[in-house]
Image (cartoon, rainbow, N blue to C red):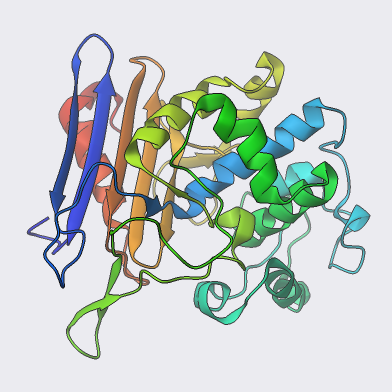
Length: 321
C-alpha cells in the first residue's frame, strides 16, 4: 500500500483446514479519514461477466437459448451477426472490437448506445473463431440477450437465479449511479497531482460487462460456486472451464465461458474507475482469494493483480505461475 499509494485495501484468503486471513486496511474516504471496512460494497467491474455467463448457461440448460444461436436473432444489423454465435460471445472469440474504454464508461448512457458504437467499427472486426480477444462488448451484448430471452430485466434474472439461491445479499446489478455505503473510489489526476474521487458512476452502458457491485464476503461465496459449478449441470461446467490463451496478454491468462484461468486458479478480475478487484479459487486447496483496492488508474496495471500475485507467491508457491 505504501509503495503504490493505495488509499485502502480489503483482502480475504480462506484455506479450509489451514486458516484464513481477512483484513481491511487504509481509508474508505480520504476526505473524512473513514477507515475501510470488510463490509464495504464496491464496484466489481468485469467480475460481472462471471454472473452474466452463468445466467446465459442457465438459460441454455432451460432450453431457452443455444450456444449455436446467431447474434442476428437479436441484432440482425450488427456486423457479422449471421456468423457470430452465443458461444463466440461467451468465449471472447467473436472478433468484435470495443469502443474506447473511456467512452464506454463516460460517454454512452445505455447498452444500446455502446453496441451501436461498436458496430460502427465493423470494418476492424475479425472473423469469429479466429482468436480469443478480450472485448467488453461481447458481454454488453450477452447482458442484453439475458434480458430478452428471460423476459425479465437482466438484474432481475441474476437476482432470481444466482444471488437468491446463494444467499448473496450484498451483491447487486445496479440501475443507478449510486454505490451503497460510505466507500469512495479514486483515480490519480495528473493535472492536479492528487487523487480524484470517481465514486459516482453510471454503469448502464457497460451492463453485462462490468455493472455489478458486491463485497468480499459475497465474492468468497461466488468464487467457489462459479468455479465448482454449483448452479450448473456437471457437463455445462466442464465445457465452461475449457479455456484458451487470451491474445495480447503478456501473462498466462486463459479464457473459457465467462471465466479466467491462470495456472490452477479459476476466477476473474475486474476494474472500474476507482476500483480494482480480483477473485480467485484454487480447487486443489479449496482456497479462495478476494481483493479490492479503492484506486484504479486508467493507464496503469490494476493494483489488485499485483496483490493477488504476491499473495499466491507467499501462501501458494507451488501454484504460482
